[in-house]
Image (cartoon, rainbow, N blue to C red; front, side, top):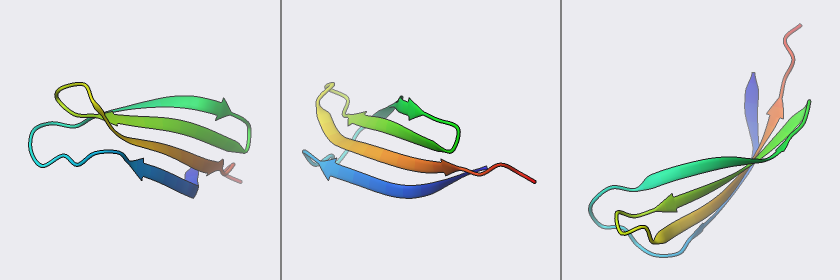
Length: 61
């Protein structure tokens, strides 16, 4: 199981219509924590938001 520890997001430009596409890339994949970088772009390919998600990995007992 994975649970969220921290979310940080910076919104760079508004999106009022159309599609937004997100790409998540692992920054750190450890045994007990993971850190992911998430970039959101609009239909024109312009960066609209950058985010970092830190997760705790819980081992089932």
